[in-house]
Length: 561
Image (cartoon, rainbow, N blue to C red):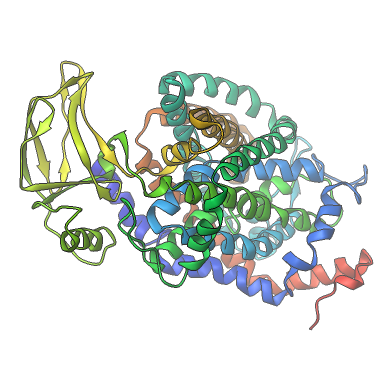
């Protein structure tokens, strides 16, 4: 498992997690923002009018209303990225990563409008009478690049698992176990059955479920966040200072947090921002293609609102809760995950400034330290080696105990290049427990305890994750099925759905770090072909928007050339 994660991390580091990918993603959004004259500002009010039904007409071709399409697309984006993803970004890069998430969303509003406009314009009607669309259709029908369309469609299928399936149920099951003690297998089994009942009904049933759940879950989560902020009101301004004030300097070491560089905050913020709102990934256009609209640009206007709602509102609320509560820099007792655990050769002490700085530079990738290989001697749960240092979740691990079942472990553990092998003892797995920083959903759970509701606040996270993540899984089942139809035809959709449901169940008890790494790779595989297509069609996009503005009598919204 550790070897697999190391291999996937290597791929992610040179692909989805690389600087060139981040620059391409942001660059496309920045280019279109200036090229189209800041449409996210000019058309914001008009977009609200469109989604409210002001321009709806029953004769328009499609399967869903504007609001249903928006709800379906939002249900596909508002997921673990809004809760666990924000917490992971802050854990890796510090509070300033939130700023980069918001900036990504601001330019992503334009990217989302453009990709939806093109996909809606070149959508097709299937033999069963339903509408199918997405970037693969404009790549084939307009760019005449069937090979690029095929790459995108195949990447969409992979991403339906890496983005919409595996990390979603994984976060749900972990949150349900930590908050309610519900077994991972039980959570996965029950939700897999519900998932099957919904996705087998097609886009109309998916849209009906999304239309009901998406607004409800957003309101519940925002109200829950406000209770935390009300309790920590005196920390809101300092939190805002950390989010915006550390953008050019990075985050200094504080508490258990060893510090974050500008580059790391930028990279992780943009990366998690994309994972959250999916602007440029090409997923939302598949849902919007089904909307009843005569003008493709009108559906693009609706899509413009998605990154604003998803990231600038919901993700920012999560980030403000995390930073104002102080949970992001505190250590908590937790069950160590092997992929987050590294054992250094040599004794380093957090309270010795020079040694802390050495380890911090190692964690930040600025220097190398020797990794331990050999045996750990454990007596009654305590590690007796004095020449090692345990690092878990990018922090010095404290009060470490080695356990199996409910008891203490005695024996030896083999360590190879800093990674420990944990055996089975009397049918119980050996595991390490101690105090360290948290990330992802467990960090958000702790943050939500620091409010008016006290320990009851921890239930906001699992309930929100259950709603957010499950609706995301539903939407991505639709995206993946449309990609299958494009590549192989409608008769293969049922096979995809079966594999999708089974994988959903299996991921409920799989290591989270591997799943997050996999999601980063699949996002990049899907995004790159889409960004290439968007940039190639920039003149057509501008012409379509100009014609739409004139046809709708929106002369006051024209861009100044």
